Amino acid sequence: MNPTIYDVAKAAAVSPATVSRVLNGTKVRADLEERVREATKALGYVPSRLATALRTRNSRLIALCIPDLSNPFFIAMASAVQRTVVEAGYSLVLFEVVPGSDEELRCFQTIIAEQMAGVITVPSHDPTRIQGLLHADISVVAVDRSGNGLDIDCFLIANEQEGYDCTNRLFDVGYHHVACISGPVGVETADHRVAGWMRAVSERVDESHAQRVVRAAYTVAAGRRAFNELIEKYPDTDAVFVANNLLSVGVIQAVISGNSHRNFGILAFGSVPYMLADLPTIQVAHLPARQIGSGAATRLLERIHGSKEAPERIIYATTVNWNLTSAEDLIEERAELGAESDFSAS
Image (cartoon, rainbow, N blue to C red; front, side, top):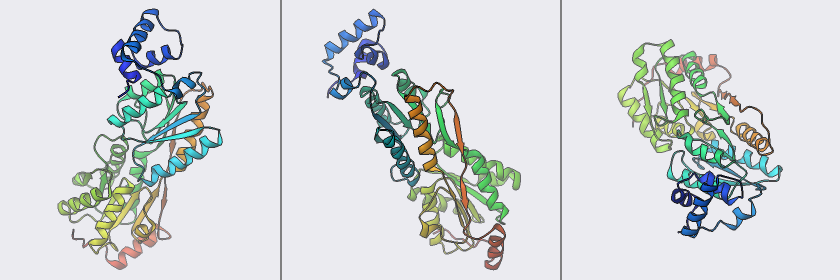
């Protein structure tokens, strides 16, 4: 395997950014430059032809790092990013990487080595990874999750407030035992949506309801398992706020297979296939994926072109689709069907 600038940095006991500066002809301390030159020679490191061609910072490549290309939210976001950057004369390089993973680190190493012009990324909890990009003088914009205190632009959804509002919608139409299924503990978006659900529950019902939450991986199968686990433990649950679209698909499948979907309430956070969502007690909070993508891409282009304005946190809201004409219609529909849930997990 050919050595990378990270191998050179380790051998020279300097940062990858220092290696990049030396290779790009940027002035650094004489002793640091000497160490980098010696390490480069000892390792036989040869910069890629693309990186050599781009040393003047004229790169027309922009990277987009997202965690899941099977998720419609990220597909829509990627489409909007691509359209925006291509119209501006840039090319998009798409990376599918889980935030915090080894693949993410290798992705960032490639971006630095190839001296790409900028990055749009869903950041991990480790700020040092993005700091490595910033030290290499690469513009960065965060989407979906915050930059963990880093001084960068962030394009986000108001996850806690949306979780609170979505949960209250279920209470408002007459459900009494509203549970929550969300993503893994420690994932910023999942944690914030649970916090919103918890706040609504604490205001509307007794404290025992705060236990009605299951955390699961962001997959359809995990959604089915999480729902069955929830119902087995709390069989009187009559509605659930599902804080991710893939989880929602699994939950809807489980509810339908239990033959009580006419009574059971679901509010899915993120779009789900039309055939699954077309039931009277299922509502969908549609996420502004395309707006986030185009906004983030536009801001990144401004940074690449030299904008020095203070970084911003741009917060978006969801749009909830009620399949019935109003909350009152849903209350009436549930009254006709029988308001008590008769769900049995399968």
